[in-house]
Length: 161
Image (cartoon, rainbow, N blue to C red; front, side):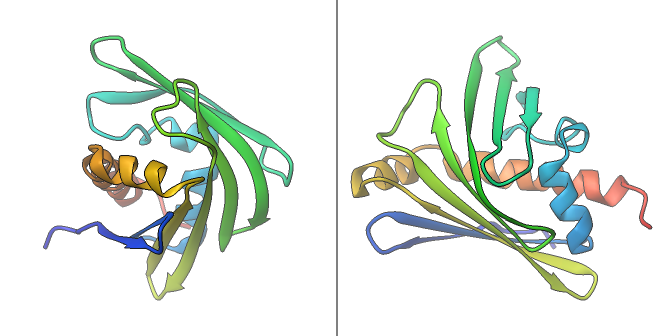
């Protein structure tokens, strides 16, 4: 049975996304926070690839990602880590180089252990209702779902402790 991305618009400014990964929480957390692992799966739709990944994983530390599409187009973004509770929770800001929505977003990722699975929940709080609605109207759902499928494939092939 294929995994389905669950998306909910909450309030006026939030999007909540949920996915279940068939891997232990510590491994899913590592896949989101270690550049050498992110480089192997992250990027959104398959025509995009993560080509630059810098992470200073500490409160106040920054991250920067650049993805490149097969036609050479690039998309860059980054932010600052506000909270880190490994392997349970990450909170960080998100700002795109070429902003396609207004303001800075605040992203909260929760990694919930559920036996051999990890329930992954992401809440994104946007600066305005208009920014949130612009994201909902974009192809974001396709990109997130494809990225999560790519992570599923990576985790399935990753050696377990």
